[in-house]
Image (cartoon, rainbow, N blue to C red; front, top):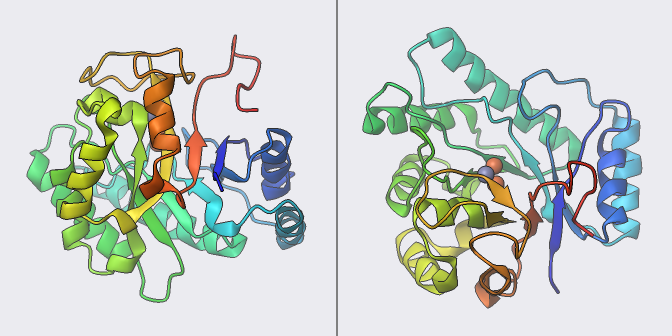
Length: 272
Ligand code: FE
Ligand code: FE
Ligand code: ZN
C-alpha cells in the first residue's frame, strides 16, 4: 500500500490532534509536523491527554506511528561550533526534541545535517558527528534521519560521501538513517529520472534499509542548481513521471512519502 502524506501544521493548543486531523482531511496515511515554528526553537509543553486522543484518531484512521515524522527546526546547526554557547544550545535542543518525540510516541526525526558556514567542511562534518554522538542515547526509541541537502550555501550532507561519513562515525547505528528529498537531490545534481542508479549506489555505500522517509517535491530550479526551492508535483523541472518513479519505487515501498510542496496562491493546500 502506498504510504503518503504531507507536512501539516502543529499548534500548541491542539498539538498532535490538530496535525492528525489536517492529515486526514487530505486523505493521508502519513504526515510530518514540526513541534513548533520551523524557524525558531520556542517549544510548548506536551499535553498527554491530547496525545492520547491523537493516537486514538490515528488508530481509527490506519495511520501507523512509524509513518508519523517530526522535522527538527532548520536553524539547529550541529556543524558550527564557532560559538560554543550556540553549539551547546543546538545539542541540548535536539536532545529535548528527542524527548518530546518519545513523549508523543513519534520515532522518526528529520534533521538538516548542518551548514559549514566559515568552517572547513571536514571539520564541520566532524562537529555533526560529535554532536550526534552526544545527543543519541542507547535507550532512545528514535531514529534521526539526515536529510539529503541541495547544496545551497555551505550546506553539508549534499552527497552520499558526506552522509556515509556521518553514519559511519555515529556510534549508535540503529538510531541514524536518511531522508531523501527529491527537490534537494535534483538541485544537488542527481537526476530523478534515473533514481534507480542513485538507489543502487546508496544501497552499496550506506544500505537501503537506512531510508526512513522520502520528501517528494518538484523543483523550481534545474538539475544541479544548488538552490532548494520546492514546486508542486508536475509543475517543476523534475516532472510528474520522474516523481512517480520515486513514489512507486518498489525499493521505497515501505518508506513514508511526504509532500512539502507550496500552497497554491499561498492559500490552498495542494495535498489532497
Ligand atoms: Fe527538510
Ligand atoms: Fe525536505
Ligand atoms: Zn528543501
